[in-house]
Image 1 (cartoon, rainbow, N blue to C red):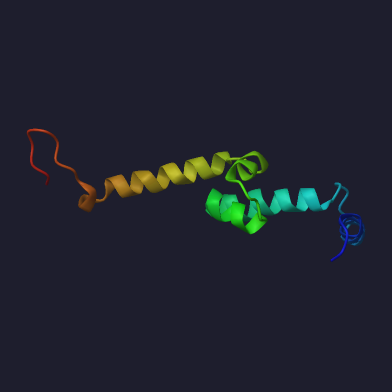
Image 2 (cartoon, one colour):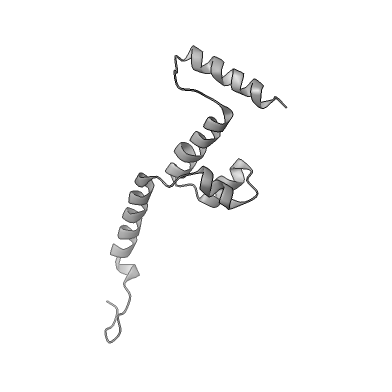
Length: 97
């Protein structure tokens, strides 16, 4: 297995080749993968935690951040589910439609 230092050196080479001026390290790569690739595409916090090899989901919750776009997308999904006729619920004193 390669050392963290060696992987960071490879990432720096890739950044230089691609003219990326931001710093690149394994820590940044893992964080970007977790937030940009996994969480922002709807992968659960639990699955993300497993993929990153965290023994506790608390580690992932610190590592990952809830993205505003994800909150909006989940609210849209909820609205769509609640708008479906099959989800109508009878209120006290009234029958469901």
